[in-house]
Image 1: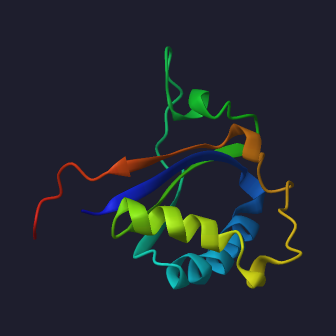
Image 2: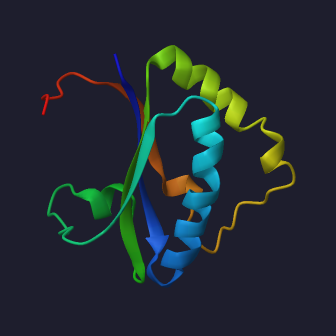
Length: 120
């Protein structure tokens, strides 16, 4: 059964291109370690809630947008092995995360079993 890593984060609105470059750089590495697909979704219609909301969850600040993304894996075992391998991949040797794009400390992430997926 497919397994999804989900992510919610706040990104500097004026750093959209830089964020996309990071995502495009990372995708082949994840793919080479077993990921099937990914999606990076830029805020469009994301209201500020009174009790809870995407912006509240990531403590979105002025000048930031919410990004919702996920990586699909064939199963949890592949995801676990793949995530370990990604961060040991030599293509990331010496890579320094650009904190001018986002604050990773406010990123929310987790792994999810696919419960239901309608067929086409």
